[in-house]
Image (tube, rainbow, N blue to C red; front, side, top):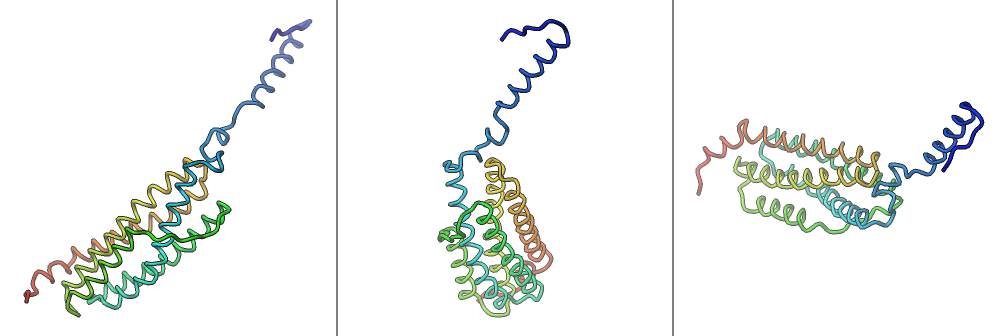
Length: 204
């Protein structure tokens, strides 16, 4: 487009007018983001995974009291009780995420966590009461659940960012931090004495 003017000042005003008009019509970062596609396949997958972990967290709310009751170590029992409170918060946080997305909070059975929970229940059935061996098994099952959740939330945080949903990414990051801390606590308990105590117990 030619710039017609009778002097430097008029030319400059015409130039600025064209530049500002072009900027106005440039696509924004938000428009370029996958988040702009409200029905994208990425968003669909993200929702599916939210439903999956939502089911898992609600299942763990019911399971953690059983693990606490079965634990021999007072410290392990306290760790399970503390994480139960956190897990209830994780459920509420996920419900916030669904709300921010304008979606109904819906749980869909998670085969992975279902299997881990069932394994934990088997450990309780197959080990003796008041033994360190049982605590080792409970920690083992608990850390399997934590590792699955850490992987899930880590991926969900990145997907939320890619969808342009930073507030959701921030919420999920809080849960990720708590899951990592819970896993570290179980490792600390295992290595600070429970594993050694179980090594001193005589097998039948």
